[in-house]
Length: 128
Image (cartoon, rainbow, N blue to C red; front, side, top):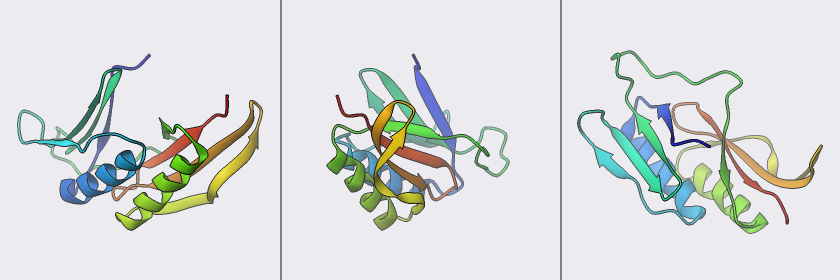
């Protein structure tokens, strides 16, 4: 559905460390740092791309209130690894601890974090 998602960051070094850790816990390769034309860190998969960038307008990055980006996790253990890697890399665990939750779609395994810039992300595993 999506080709890419970008998040704003004020400290690319901290964001690079954080996203390498959380996405690495989900099995993705480290990000590629780009200086131009848009300074940022890019994570590519065959199905899409995540960019963590300095805002083009030169203003400070800020997070969306109510916005969340969810990352696919292949197992409940990957959800927990995502949460642990994120906290160890400078993120903040938010909401309930990583693990199973009841939802309108059945039981899902979730972990919610704030990245170093305050963006809200989560890892999601939906048992088959």
